Image (cartoon, rainbow, N blue to C red; front, side, top):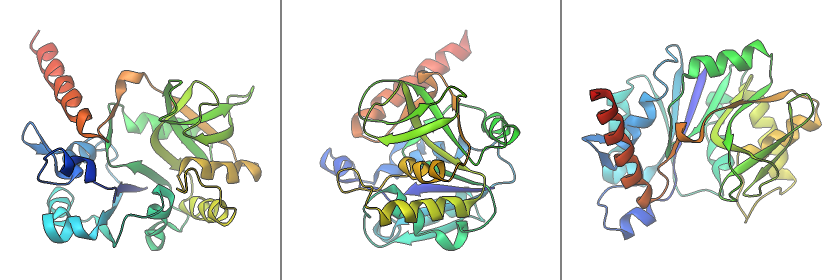
Length: 248
């Protein structure tokens, strides 16, 4: 399996709040955020990691070196500038993912406290062409999927609540080339949201081709977003609460 971690987002909000390093290198209890993200997938032992990284973050802050220390065999794709969305960023890794290998695309500013072996096993046992981790919400900050009577996905939408099934920014494809084809079709149709192209709506192209897309639901508390500066303090409080719970 290939795990594509998207680390090429803008850190302007962090710099404006006085942070000296980009979002993914924000230090929390002695570890950079990127280390927490990587560790959340540690149970997927045989996975090959691919990272898309802003070239500026590598040149100025050596993010590429940090990644190589954490995962020596990782592939790093340097991104010259912030793209027109996560789907565009993911496609920059096309030479590594346009194949028959399973692909997991994940956002680099979130942490999921789940056993990913169970998640992947659930998707493979159902013989799904695509799988999406979901949690309960109605807020328009998330992407959403609508399910049919058979609990398979019949529609995906970005920043538009079409159900209570919000997506957690983890997207599974049985074959990486299915994502590449679907994302290209989506872009060709100009199916953007606020002039940005996201990963989740690419599943609509697979649904049109009768591919089976399923979900794996988690509790809201298992999903931790660290996309904004104010999320850092919430994550720190979460870690401290976990530490206190372990002491009891």
